Length: 213
Image (cartoon, rainbow, N blue to C red; front, side, top):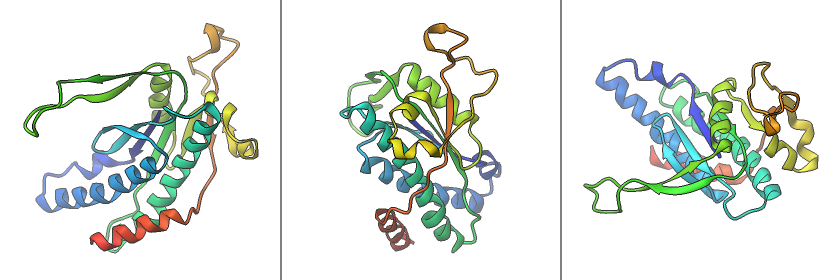
């Protein structure tokens, strides 16, 4: 489960000036689709667009090792696209660089479609919803993470490629209340992932963004 959040979005929407709101919509129309394209590349299902962020399910059809590898690749590539490709496009319009944060975790989830049966565009539709501790932890980790940071839980770190383990830093808060089997002496640890990417695929997204302006 991956949670992506744009930092400072409340400030961006604090004005009801039409030009400011148009500017905000322009930002969202650059950031959100670009992040979704990265997620889709790794087979993720975007569960929800929250306006200033995304919630996505990853790894439905892959084992833990492949899912963990994809998760850290998705997160690092999202930041690469945001900072190196999207922000320069926004800068051409006089818009300051956008910051974000990511929280993610891995574990069993119950997936179900919640809502009304699919109908016409005038009706509400059902959407795939994930329920489980991993989703709760991922949401919590996103809230704890700092600006432009990727936080994840033990499950992702433990299943990550061995050559990437040095990129994880233990950031478990002292008041963290997730433990293995309810054992207070066995905390389910939190990690900050410091890996970066310069995947050439991301350049295609940057070119696509420029063509849209």
